[in-house]
Image 1 (cartoon, helix red, strand yellow):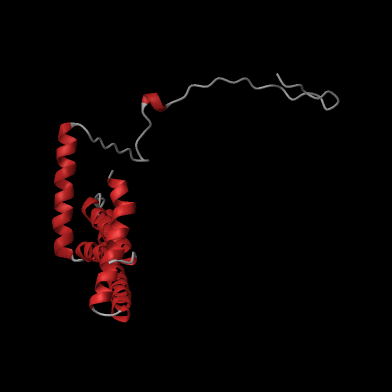
Image 2 (cartoon, rainbow, N blue to C red; image 1 turned 120 degrees about the vertical axis):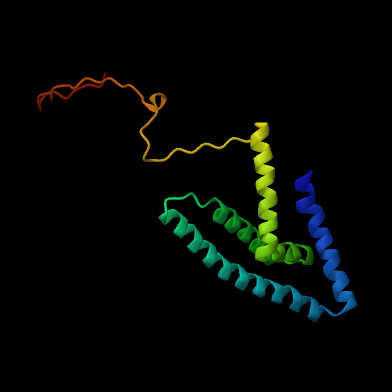
Length: 159
């Protein structure tokens, strides 16, 4: 049902809003609004993306898992994608995700949802470092026999 809203109802509402704005102003102004929001959003997303990338690298260099920065990066990516999509509602939602204050509020809300989901047992996370030794159930026992080389005049047959 949510996908129905996302892929069918949202574009219809977006088109209606664009036609409404064009009828209240002009098509030129409406086109300019759509283009300018995309350019401003792309610039904001790129600038903030570099900052988040530096935060991630600093945390990794300290040996920490950069969970907060990764969530910020994900929200920033979604905001940038929403701004690339032509429409007024998606632009508003995209700008909300690009503004650090509102992105922090949304990020905190997502963390609370995840925390409740983990406490209820409906979400599980596992992590295994490549530096950890394999667990006993990860080992596969194999047996083999080495054959002596066959003489050149007699080819060996598969078994």
